[in-house]
Length: 123
Image (cartoon, rainbow, N blue to C red; front, side, top):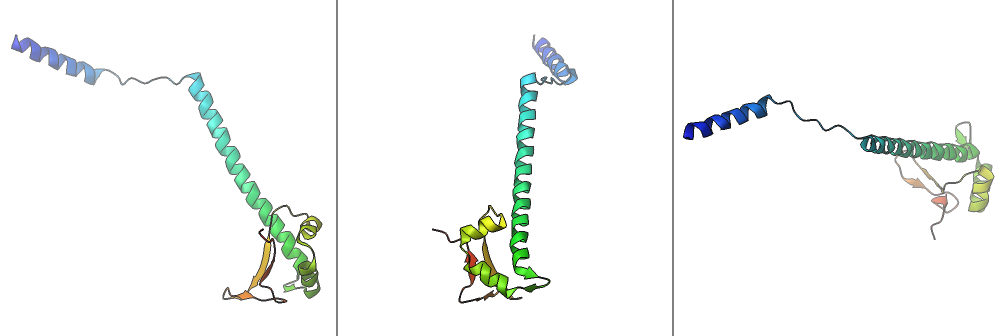
């Protein structure tokens, strides 16, 4: 009787090793959810890159309104600094908040007209 038990265990082990691995088929619901998830990830990435691109375009608008050639136009800078922030945003067509400040080549802020920067003032 002991031998029969050993044989049956060996047969069971062989069957487990020989049997093909069981693969659960994906249901149509799981496929649909994976597609929805992929679309959401793609939309998130597109939105993030678009916002970065738009911010860069708006920064270029500000720079272009202040710089002529490779130098800052003093008249444009004075006008820029004396114009109301909200009017300035509207005039330039800017939707994001911004602060303009200048630094020297070492990264030290430069004071202009008694201010180190101008633009958005957090309330």
